[in-house]
Every structure is written in structure tokens, then in C-alpha cells.
Length: 286
Figure 1 (cartoon, rainbow, N blue to C red):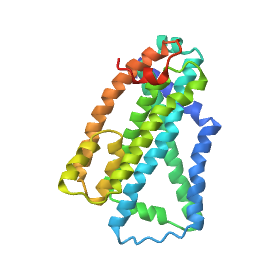
Figure 2: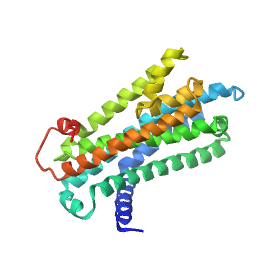
Figure 3: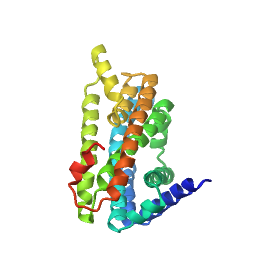
């Protein structure tokens, strides 16, 4: 293992344990569990499991909502992490020891580790809950969803989160005091809400004619609206699985370009101690 990899893992480990030991993180984890428990206990879910099209459509429509919720949680964590390094006067020392690229990659890896642990924790919780309440509805439901749709949905979640984390870094690195954290999260959350609403709007239109499909093809190539819009379109049969996965590759290319820019902005922002307008600095092209 080379030195840079050790640095990356050290940053990721620090980020992971710093968040997992916080009370706010576990509050965000447990709130959805209350909703899940209430569904198992009080809601009489009757689904025709022979209607696979309906099941896949429900799954597809739930993915934009899950993407929105997960991104909403971890955008704030990333902003707090960058702000903590900046306001604690560690930025100069960190930049002299760990390169900006390793810092960003380490922070993102730590966030993805948290996300993976959260998903695994939910799976274990739902499994235990289903055994206690003798209700295997959710596992039976997932068992009827097409594998290709499940795989794409998971990849779409990670792609969407990656983009919003990169955007958050570009704004959070210009924070000079902790009171500005909320200002740094406003732009990525605004984009998140906008893309989420766009995905809901296009999915509410139902079936599309030939000319409209080509417009959707172009839209699906742009992250993260493509990651939120594509799963329901796959489930409804408006776009093919081949096209969906090809758009994911294009999204990754676009995100990589944004990632390269965010590294440069991150390095510049951490070394800047002057109080600046976060919105203007984050949107500047460097």
C-alpha cells in the first residue's frame, strides 16, 4: 500500500468515526426506522405480487425519493466536515501533509462507508422486524423487482450522492466561521430539490411519444437528474436497460469533470482566509 493510499484511508477512517460517534448521525438513521416500524405494525399492505409491472413501477418511483433523502443527509455532513477543518485552523497543516485530492477522496470514501453501513443496518433491522412480526412483505416485494433495475438504482444512488458531495465541497471550502455552514449547503440542496422536482414532473407524465423520448434521453445523460429520473422510466418501459446504463457512463464522465474542478476549488478555498461571499466563490470558474 503506497503512502497516498494510506493518507486516503486515514482521512476516510477519521471521517467515518467522527460521524458515527455523533448523536445527530444516529438521529438521522433512526427516524426512518420509526416510519418502517409503523408501516409493519399499522399499515395493511396488500399487493398483488403477480403484477410484476406494478411492483417494478413502485420500486422505480421510490428511488428518486430515497436519492433525495440520502443526499439531503450526507450533503450536510460533508459541509460540516469541510467547515470543521477550515475553522479549526487545520487547513494549512492538512494541505502540507495531505494533498487536496486525497482529502476529498478520503472524505467521500468516509461518507460512502457511512451510507453503506446505514443501508446494511436497515436491511438487518427490516429482517429482524419481519421475523418478529411474521411479515415478510418487503423481502417478497424486493424479490419481484427486476435485478437490472435494483443494480441500476444502487448505482444511481452512489452517482447522485457523489455529484452533490462534489458541489458541496466547492461551496463549503470558503466557509470562514461555523455560522456560514447553512449558507454552504443552500446551493447543493437547491439543486437537489430542483432535480428531484424535475424527476417527479417527468415521471408524472406517464407514457411518451417518440419525440418526447428523445428529450428524455438527453435529460437522462445529465447527473443527478438522470439518476433520479431513469429508474421509473426503466420500470415503465419508456427507456431500455441498455440505454439506462449507457447514460450512467455519461453521467460518470460529467461527474469526473466536476470532480477535477472541485479539487482545484477545494485547495484554493482551504488556503483562503478572507471572508468572501460563498455563493459567488462557489460558482466562479477557475
